[in-house]
Amino acid sequence: MEAGQTSVPMKIVVFILFLFLLAPVLLVIPISFSGEQILTFPPASWSFRWYVALTQNSAMISAFWTSLLLGTIVTVLSLLAAIPAAYVIVRMRTKGSEFLYNLFTAPLLLPTIVLGLAILIVFASAGFLGSFWGLVIGHLVITLPYALRVLATTLGNISLACEEAASTLGGRPFTVFRRVTLPMMAPGIVAATALCFLVSFDEVVITLFLTGPRLTTLPVELFHHVESRADPLVASVSVLLILLTLAVVMVVDRSVGLSKTFVK
Image 1 (cartoon, one colour):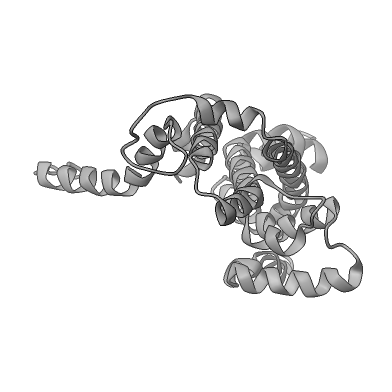
Image 2 (cartoon, rainbow, N blue to C red):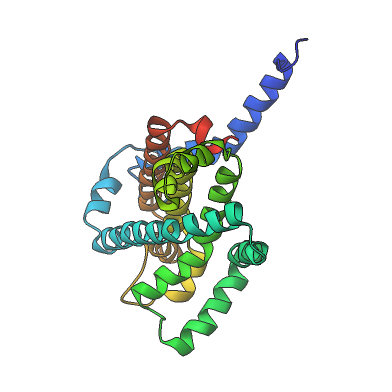
């Protein structure tokens, strides 16, 4: 067998594993078209009633727009903080670079529920509970480490030759960074953007600690909906979220390519 060639049995095993992992997602799609009052599989009747009900559910729609706005702001702020931080850590390599990297990525070491409880205790005294900007800060705590790790890895894999050549030709440091370094970091920036947005949009544990009766996100609204009801409305929302995720992945693939973005 040639090097790098996968055997047929291994391909079958991988296919079965993928099918096992995707089975819950595949089951959600037919359930979303159920005409029943409760979650059942297979559905006894078919209908678009729950998609229509979703358009009439003001709480879900409001929570969706809140999550969309929150994810967008958190993603932009994460990139604005992570790009210069990654450059300082990877390129300048000062005495505090390793400490800065460990400080930014420390939240990844903690369980989300522990992190949420800690943020709750701090925000309770600061008056940030139940506020939109409190949610932004809370989500930044978990999205910034992902952005920094992706961008630091991307920048570490970029050769210094192009930047040094631009410097020797008279380019100022900021000009070299803007016209040479940033374009070469494009795959990492796109990956960090997609990852931060999806992590923020889908975050539920920390958000549960920070939201209030007047402010909620889509995952939290779904959580409360499932607590009181078991209708296929949740399945219809899940299908739309799957389509949103696929749309983000397709944008990444069309812009820079998945192989360049997520594979070293």
